[in-house]
Image (cartoon, rainbow, N blue to C red; front, side, top):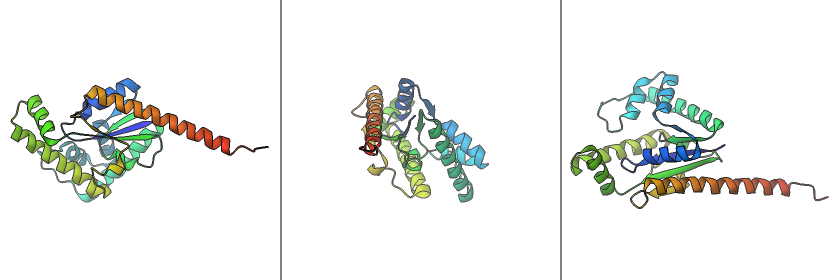
Length: 204
């Protein structure tokens, strides 16, 4: 039973990669349903809207008390999901909340800003300048979220087991890398557990 967290930059094709990974592994993909469930538990639906509104278009400013209650609910939901296993969690600081879980693989998807801007401009039919503004707003929101509530840097490499630059890897390639890394890690963990059991056997 395993879990994968995927942190991504806007325009890094994270959602597409997450869907591919979940489909190939037969895992459940959790994204906004996690946000909504946590908000219901915390009694703070406005926090869920603010979390989804990463570009700040709605101008929502939930109270710190409501935000902290929401974060606690997110942690509870994530821990329940990992206990069930076979899940891909997209976003919401999974790489921090679940960093001590041995059966969880933490992945970050990134790409240079110009590459991401070109993708967004093409998909939305907007100017490069407009796309760059979206990227800057999204990066700022995600960076501040982790700093404010978890006191970590979003781009800290120690939070991740695997970092993929999607300007050099297609979504299919990225999904393959993630699945292969998970398989290798599971084998290593299984071998380590087996060797530990053997070392504990009575030599007589």
